[in-house]
Image (cartoon, rainbow, N blue to C red; front, side):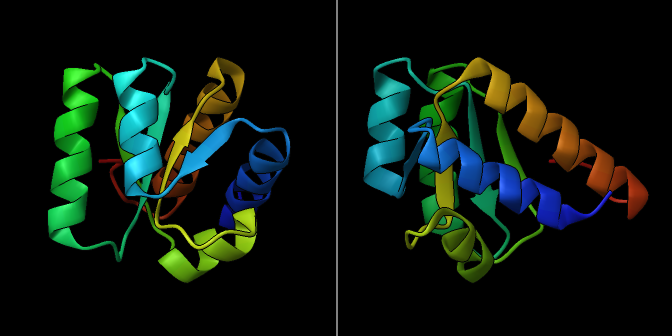
Length: 111
């Protein structure tokens, strides 16, 4: 499994209007109960990641670190972002499965 398939799926989700990106938009999606999954780039600041994790825990929404940079996530969705919320259950399940498959292939544990 190629991680680029993950980035491709992120781009499709954005074009379908099923993502919110950036800390403020993601936290708003979490507050409104619209997010099914939050993805965090591996090079996001610890403070930003902690704030989003806290909001996601309160919303009972899973958070996964993807082993991609802010730059590669930004290229995939066409917007500068290192944090995205997935607003569709089907996309969330597909993305989570791809992340876990890619991590398993590389011997990493999904966080």
